[in-house]
Image (cartoon, rainbow, N blue to C red; front, side, top):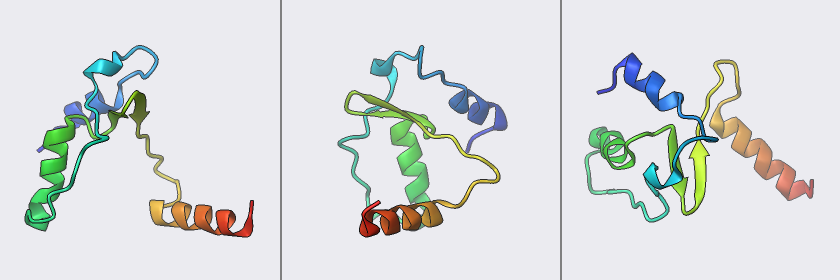
Length: 87
């Protein structure tokens, strides 16, 4: 699949200097729910090219992860709780 060097290249994209037209626009992306679950991640990655850096319309998006951060489910649950309470 990916080598550590490829992942480093994916993560090293500088959003201040990248040509956004070179990033894959995922705004119209649809998941193939008929594909076997084992192949879905590979299909997404082959379409997106760089899973760490892409664009949605005109907005560039770069994903970064911290080794000691909360998991996405916890962060999203906390976000929804704050929204529900009016914060």
